[in-house]
Length: 489
Image 1 (cartoon, rainbow, N blue to C red):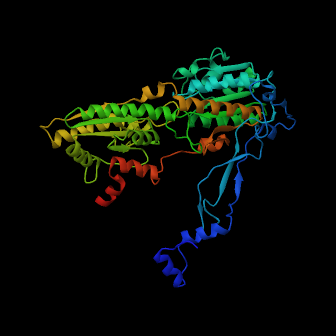
Image 2 (cartoon, rainbow, N blue to C red; image 1 turned 45 degrees about the vertical axis):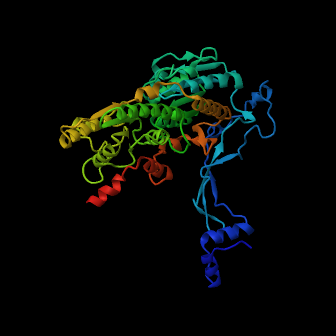
Image 3 (cartoon, rainbow, N blue to C red; image 1 turned 135 degrees about the horizontal axis):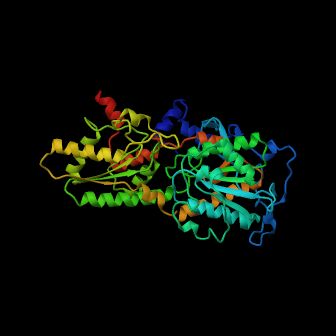
């Protein structure tokens, strides 16, 4: 019998129930626990609307000299990836939360394929802003189609969505893309906007493309959903897949998008430079603006990696400047204690604090997003105004660093390059198996196929109630601006 602490022994002696943790421990010693129902997300397949579609034959990997498929090599429809892997058990041994589990079809090669390599014509397009790893994904799509499945008709669409109907596609082959993974940006070129659904699908049909690989962010994925739906409406044998690209890591459901880890690595270098500048000045503040329109993942992870940050400001949390518990009071104290401070701000933070003209309130970019004002430049101006007002005869400097385009334009690091290979090959395997209208990405470390519509609607925001955000605040010792604001009213 296990030894009980004195309070536990007293409770049992008095006939009281043991604590829930003890009840659960005792229950699991004798019984297995049961899962709540699991719902498998249905994945679109070409056979859903092409009734006479038949497999093209066995997977050519069976005869590939570099692969020796054994039991378990090929993925089948019963292989799934669970959306939630962490759960809470009730004292009875059942799952208390979450009450409902989702599962997605696991990514990987299938034993039967639905595209003959001789008849396959693949199109690859990159849309939206730059992100580390875009060229790696293109390279791995070309090499994977060529080497794994014997596809020889592979085309690059230049200049984003508008390139489908305005620019002649370029032929791609492994020799051409050999060193692309070492280059930043996208060799295929990119643009925002230019989405004309009818023209795009007409071009896909006219060029004879039957596989379309679309690389882009959340706006691009919403466009991919419309392309898939139009292809399905026309009953075309065209597989459509999206490969999420967002340096901000704001695409939902998947663990992360490619390029994110490279971005954090580069952001940390900018923070280090800001720290050196601030530390080398009298009353110096290093101010770094990082990417993150709606989410603060880069700012958060770079802050955790750096440990030199005194205050991290992200879109998911409010902050204010003046008054008790405000940013200015906090920085005043830091400068007194240390003589310098480093502030990291995500580009979407504090947008409600920046004065806007009527025209600025209505301004949108080519993707339809609200044009953000430069929170870094605004904050730098406000900091100088504050110091000149409160300490007019004392030295003070703000060094403002905006590494946005440096971060976007670099090649992917080793971790992201590996990720790009896995996501590209998973996309190829999925289309070859006849699946369509899906995104591929890791869920809890395992690559899965997720309906495009689900990813296009999902957001990945920083959970400020999560341990990771509390960890940030414990490192920076910054105030909880929301709570302080409420308490000062």
